[in-house]
Length: 318
Image (cartoon, rainbow, N blue to C red):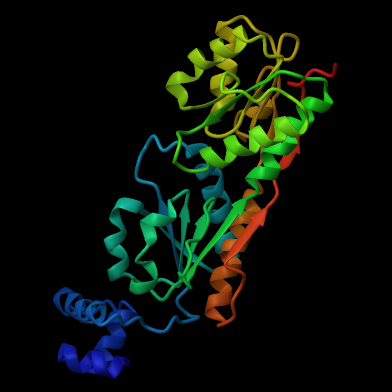
């Protein structure tokens, strides 16, 4: 369907339809809503313009979203990278996606969102959507994903503890079964432990959120673990607090590896060894995807970046 056909169906001129999609300020709201309704009913999407460089960043609406720390670091990276590429940014909570029908944008980036939340994206919008830290769903030609290599990330953490002499490692993966990256992280930890001949029982590997951390760390200490690996969320802060309650000193009494929290990890007592995602790299690839769409070229639908290990003082060298 062409713009001229939308104009005929809406009973307005092609120029008016063009102004609606370019968000001209002199278009009355009732005319704009009417044209958008006609376009939506006929699955019409305006051609993406290289002049319209508005990118929508879609944020989870839940204030206690379990990857809040990752979300904030990716957000900081996006606000650094996108403006340098000439993009303008609009931030939109995920529970207000209907607003996308009334704004013009050349791309969207969703942080930590589940792929199932965007099953109808390709039917509604011609602009690309980039999922950060999740996998793009199958058969959705304009949905892309960029994420970190969870298998590699869990392995370098377990490998570092093993190299330092740790032989009974307790693990707490931030999150719950069936949500986010919790399951793949747990499975990857089990694989990494077994590959080194280390125990990988349910009594040593947990999924949890903040409110259970102290209790679980107490259980792991009773198992006489010599190290803790706590990926995801605000695990570094919470684990440091929990260990202080049990009068355990890092690394003298127990070694510790967490996920990087840029505002805490290097300032903790003791500074924490962490695994960290390449947040700027994730943002750069998201920008590349949107740029490639505007130039009518295409990048691979999925991209995976490695984790890095930041070695500090929280792992004892036995």
